[in-house]
Amino acid sequence: MSPPLVIPFFIPHQGCPHLCIFCNQRLIAGQTSKTQTSDSEASRLSDVVHTYLQFKKNRARVELAFFGGNFLGLEKSRIRALLKTVQPWIRRGQIHSIRCSTRPDTVTPQVLDFTRPFGLETVELGVQSMNDHVLAQARRGHTSSDTRKALALLKTHGFGTGAQVMVGLPGDSDVGAVRTAEELAELKPDLVRIYPLLVLHGSKLAQWYKTGQYVPLSLDQAIDQTKKMVSIFKTAEISIARIGLQATQMMDDTGQMIAGPWHPAFGHLVLSALMFDQACERIDFALTGNDRSIGKPEKKKIALQVHSRSLSRLQGDRKTNLNRLLQRYPEISFTIEKNDTLAMDQIHACIVSA
Ligand code: SF4
Image (cartoon, rainbow, N blue to C red; front, side):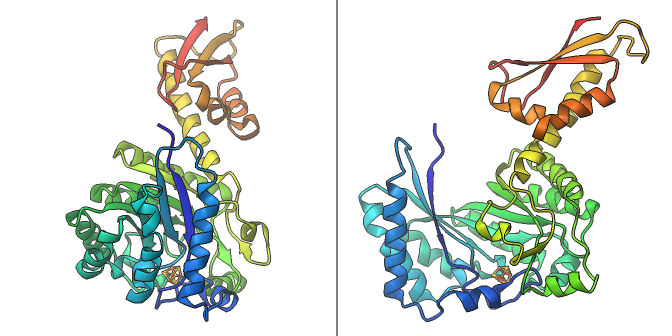
């Protein structure tokens, strides 16, 4: 089945009483019309829905998503106005469900009971980390216990659940990122999104970066940490909705994004790194019992088979994976073959000749 059409409606950083160190809320708030009336916001929402519905094509489902702010922390009248605006499309069966992102500490039984009848079905929490020291350093204003409570509450109220986490937060580490993924995996949200921390102009983090108090992860470090988290979530059978930020104009604008492991295809790099690890495992397994001593006159040949849709992930960005395989296994020559009987991202390695 084709994925749903997601109509994103951004409420940048609104509904939030806090100021995390990585957030450039004040800057964005200055650029966003705070005097926007509920009428003009409703009309902007209607325009966005109209525009996106033209691209529905043959997709069976349409979801409206309130992203970019603390949706459940908005004033009740504003939540009601936004949700009421889309009711005609819901009644006509043109929008099938609504999702939003919010802080864990704004999830209450009252707000869930209030929003559910309007069609809000999935709530994604800005979890960021499950380590309270890391959360405190990031000045998130909530703890991991808020995340646990919010996820439990959402589940008992029958909502779909999502969790957004970050790599590269001050005070966090390789081990810390793994621990966050493990603890979150035990709580079983329906989906996760993983983002590398970037230093944005106007944020507290930007000051720390300039004084050397904060050093961002390198791209390789961010890929490695994210890869470990992805692996844990995959093992726990938790859907990974997104890895890395979308290539918005802001990310290309170095005036806004000062530093950090930004790459427009970050998710692809992470999934390719996982494919490389898997390829090595499969090759080592295929070689078990075979003599793989380097310097043997006759070269071995190994065919790596993958589903056609996983081909570019196996090859890696600019064939990086292939080059790394050739360096790691100089005694082997590789061919890559399509095999659509395999599951996505599954690799089969077989020795063609020895
Ligand atoms: S929770 Fe943090 S990142 Fe989100 S809007 Fe509030 S201050 Fe910004």
